[in-house]
Structures are given as structure tokens and as C-alpha cells.
Amino acid sequence: MAGTASRLHRAEHRWALAFVAAPVIGYLLFTLYPVCFAIYASLTNWNGLGVMRFVGLDNYVRLLSDANFLESVYNTFFYMIGIPIGLAVSLALAVAMNRKIVGLTAFRTIYYVPVISSLAAIAILWQWAYNGDFGLVNQALALVGIDGPNWLASTFWAKPAIILMAIWKGLGYSMILYLAAIQSVPRSLHEAAQLDGANGWQRFRTITLPLVRPVTFFLVVTNVIGGAQIFTEINIMTPTGGPEYSTASAVWHIWRQAFRYQQMGYATAMAIVLGLLILIITLIQFSLNRRNSFVID
Amino acid sequence: MSLTTAPSRDPQNRNTLGFTTPSRKAPGRGPMSRTTSTRIGDWLVFALLSAGAIVMVAPLAWMVSTSLKTKTEVFALPPVWIPEVPQWDTYVRMWQDSSILTGFQNSFIVAATVTVLGTITCSMAAFAIAKMRLPFSNVIFIGLLTGIMIPYPTLMIPQFVMFSRIGWVDTLLPLIVPAIFGNILVIFFLRQYLENVPNSIIEAAKIDGANYWQIFWRLIFPIIRPAVAAQFILWFMAIWNDYLAPILYLNTPGRQTLQVVIANMNVQYATQRDYPLIMGASFIALLPILAIFLIFQRQIIESVALTGTKG
Image 1 (cartoon, rainbow over the protein chains, first blue to last red):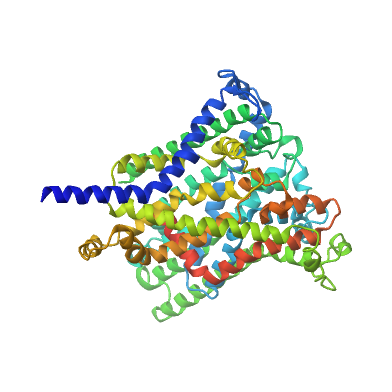
Image 2 (spheres, chains in turn green, blue):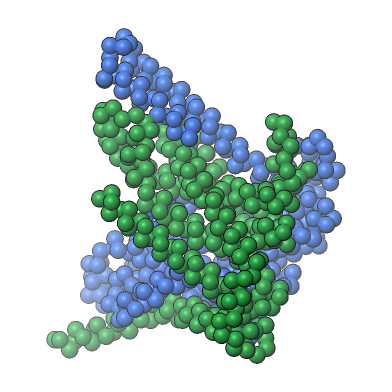
């Protein structure tokens, strides 16, 4: 009897392994092997084709004093200013949409269209919309008497311009997640608070905000991970990295070093540093989140 | 923050009028002004949402309008908002000497192959992880989990070198092959969905003599089909819109995906100041996904909300 059971289990084991084989093989071939290769390549001087000359930690030392790399990392963090702004606006939108008003479905659809739209097409559109003389943004500003700058050619305005576009594109996504969370809050909670004399702002702060906290955490984590990898907008809207490298992002800089200048070893070292930065920031966020949850409990 | 203060006024009124201090106003007017203030709040919110909606739509509308302008209208000051005679010709000539058509084909080949084969591998893996006795399950689980933590830019250079050594550069294979082995996020999502499927139906199928492939294909896959469909659409859209990996691998115009084609057109035609063509091509590039979204918007929005709240 025990023999049959274990034979059945063994058969099940074989089937189960066969079922997970594809992702496991994919993981070994396309993630684990490239990571190991990247770690080795980052310790070499290599153009991608010729011999890999081992140089130890030289690449890592070099990137610490590479002004362009540091600038691109700074820019990448700068773009993240848009994350809290976007979250605040989309939470406000979600609260607004939690009412019974006409055209809710239409609003939801309209706000979501930029999210599903191809980033390349959107970046092309906004590059033209930011044109100093003939772009939509300045023409719209001119209607209210503001003389707008030549956005993408200005060291001061190029980054805010890209942030603005990213907020516009991402608003609908965060809004949908917030709306789903807000609608899962039982009405009785709000009614009870109302009876206790809490006004709208107090109810927002004490009921809505804590209950959407998991969504905020999810959005912050995913937005930071995604924001750290910003590339498409940069490459399309500012193909040279912007005035004085003011829009170049980390991934854009890595891509250019690797695929324009064939500095594969050096670029790999930068890519590893970027990956580690993302990992560390994500871990910090998780630990902060856990600690804060304990305080609330 | 004006959005949050607008709705806040109404419940406060409701409270003071209805319960705490009824003496301040005639009691009979309580319910009346409650609905009035709610209605005013609703209109305020409606106005704000409408203003926001205009901001969301304006760039896209302007994109379409620009594509129908003449070159002179594009550079006219004061600006021409609506072209006098729509230049439909833009949408005819864009197909002539560009790679838009092959771009569509290539994007479709990549997105369809990856999503069809990929959802099958993902469903099978999710079934094994959620419902079967899997040896080394912890190692496999943690291994796959670390896979999510490694961003694509870190992997792109070694992957590129790997594929260039086997001569896959300038083909669609580097975009297809790694992806059909499965997407870890999709696997985790399906696994979570499978947690709600009772084990008893699987046991019953086993007693009936079904093997695991039959259980998967005839029993499990139909059950998880709604979740698979949602992930399928989201995945298809993500691959259709991908840009970084395609520009690494695809050099020859006829072999590029649509996003690379329009990005190259943007560079090429900007020097000729042919903005109607650029805007028209970009609009065409986002039409298929826009159509899919408008058809399946309820399912898409629901599954996005689900992914976010469960994640």
C-alpha cells in the first residue's frame, strides 16, 4: 500500500517538474546565466566582440568619477519627484469618482487611455507638443497669456517637462487602483464616523488614507522600480540626452555606452550598480512599510 | 486638494443640520439642503473631472488634428486648431515608403506568439506550484522570486551578447524566445487565482483515471480561463508597446516592430518637417491597442485593479 502511494507521488513529482520546466529553464538561461556573466563582464575591459581583459574593480572605480553617469543617476532620481505628485492627484481623482455622478464610466475610460497607449507614440506626441513655437503646450499657455519656454531645449525645463508627461500618462493606472481600494471600504464605516461628527477631511485622513495604504505602498514600490528604468521617453524626446546631459537617465546612459561606444564591460558594471540600487531601495521600502504597520497595529 | 474639500462640505452640513444642532435652522429644511449641497458638490466634482478629462484628451486630439493639417497649417501662427481641409492623404502616403506595414506584422508576430505560448507555459507552471506535489518547491519558488528582482537593463547586455553569438541579432527571436518560457508575474497571479479552486475536483478527476495533462487541459485551464484572458490582454499590450528590447536587436527597417518604426520615422521626417505624417503614423500605431482597450475595457480595468490590490 505504502509502495503504491510513493509510486504515485513519484509520478506526480515527475509531472509537476515537467510543468514548471519551462519557467525554470527560462530562468536559468535568460536570468541566472546572464547575471553571472554580467558580474564577470563588469570586471573586464571588453568591447563585446574581442577578448575580455580582466581589470578587477577598475570599472566600478571609474564610474564613481564619471560625471555623465553620476548626472544620469541624479536625473533618474529627479524624475521620481513625479511619483508623489502623481499619486496625490490620482488619489484625489479616485475620491472624486467615488460619487454617484453622470459619466463616471466615460471619465474612467478617458483617464485610462494614456495608460494603454504606446509609450513610443506618446513620447513622439509630447516631443512635438513641447515645441517652443508650434507645440500644443505653449499654444495653450498663450491662450491664458503665458509665454512658455522651449521646454526640451532648456536645462531647467526639460526634466519637469518629462515629469509632467509621465504623470499625465500614469494617472489613470493609480486612479483605478485607488478607486478599487476606496470602493472596498464599507459604507458603514463612513456613516459611523459621520455620526461621530467627523467631517469629510477627517474621514479622508482617518478612514480612506489608512485603508488605501497597501495600494500606496504597491504603487510607490512599482513606480520607483519602473522609474529607475526610465528610457523610452528620454531616447525619443531628447535623442542626445538633452541640453548638457540634463535629461539623460541611467538606463539611457548605460545603453549608449554599451551599444554606441561598445564599452560593454564598463556599461555592465553600471547596469549592476543600477540593479543593486533598485534592490536596496526596494528592500528599504519594504522594511519601512513593515515597521510603520507595527506602529499602527 | 480642492477636490477633497469640495465633498467635505456636504457631510459636515448633513451632520450639523440633521443631528447635532438642529436648532440652528428650521428642522424641516434639513433634508432639503442636504440634497442640495450634495448636488452642488456633485456638480463641482463633475466640472473638475471634466476639466481633467480635457487635459487627458487634448494631446491625443491635437495629434489627430495635426495629422490632418497641411504643413503650412502646422507652422501657422496664430495656431490652426482644426484643419480647414482635412488632409486624409496623410493616411494614404504613410504606407508608401515606410515600414509601417511590416512593423504591424512584426509586432503582431511577436506579441501573438509570446502571449499564446507564454500563457500556456505560465498556466502549467502555476498549476504545478499551486496544486501539485512539487519537489524542491521552495528552491524553485525563491529562485523565480529573485528573477523578478533583477531589472531588464541589468540583463540586456549579456542577453544581447548571447543572442548575437548565435546570430539572432536583427531577427524577432530574441524578443520571442525568452518570453515564451513564461513570465513570473503572470505565474504568480495565476497561482493566486488557483488557490481558490478546491482540491477535491482534482482528486475526483484522478479517481476517474485522468492523468495530470488531462487534468490540466480539460479541467484546470477552463476554470482559470477568465484570469488567463485578463493576463493575456495585459501581456499583449505590454509586448506591443515594448521599445527598449526591440531597438537593441532590430536594425533593418523591414524587420523592426512598429514602435521602432515610428520612432525612426520621428527622426527621419522631423528633418523634412513633415509633422502631419509623424503624428498620423504614431496615431495609427496606438490604434490597435486603443481598439482592444475600448472593446475589453471593463475586463481590463477590473483585472488591473485586481492585480494591484492583490500585489
